[in-house]
View 1 (cartoon, rainbow, N blue to C red):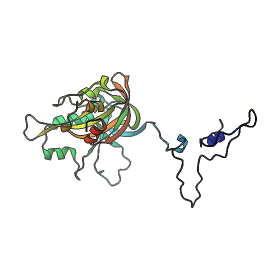
View 2 (tube, helix red, strand yellow):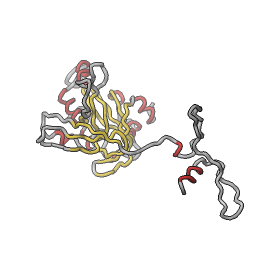
View 3 (cartoon, rainbow, N blue to C red):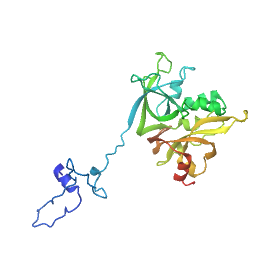
View 4 (tube, one colour):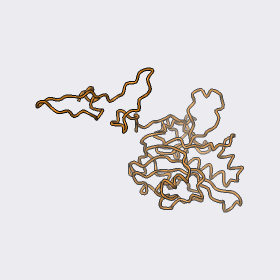
Length: 283
């Protein structure tokens, strides 16, 4: 169908007319798009919207931003082991050292590296918690940025004394590694919740900062970042008392993309735990 006829028929009203003879096709004076004069008021439009051409333009294309993949320099090669495709990465919300950042890339680090730093830091009291997690203005300074789509210039042996560039998907479909599901809290006092087999299509992936009283330090808590699924909330596998903060990472669209990989439609958003519980039938 020509573009002109397509636009005429998009109105989906008054386009069926009686035929005078076989082969006689007539089109009514349809106007799918309502004209607006320069000084006129905006019309109300059709309700419901008859076609997608008159609705907001949506996209499911993957949006990727370049980030500097910062690894801990205490151990060479950690970027090769702990920074890879499918990892969720955090950025730090702090004021830039200069008024003009001069176009520098945002720096990110992985969940595994943050958990390693938390383990090395040890149990925390309120003052130590603020030192590690909060900026000078008192806001929580760590925020999930997205999922690594690929690394450019990875340098595991640190030959070039520089960091790789992580192309981070902040929206859209991306491969998501299930390896951290079982080891993101390894060495901490927290059991992992699930493996790749538990990630079903349509489920949602969340990342939480969890805490637990330290057995060897009275008045202090251990902290770690941990993944869980929305289905775990419904099944009662999560403990809301232990969850300090929650971020929605995205929805599972392919639970068996490849070995140790699923496909997630990324949609990072900070979400209160009570909202997660209400959404999944526990409140």
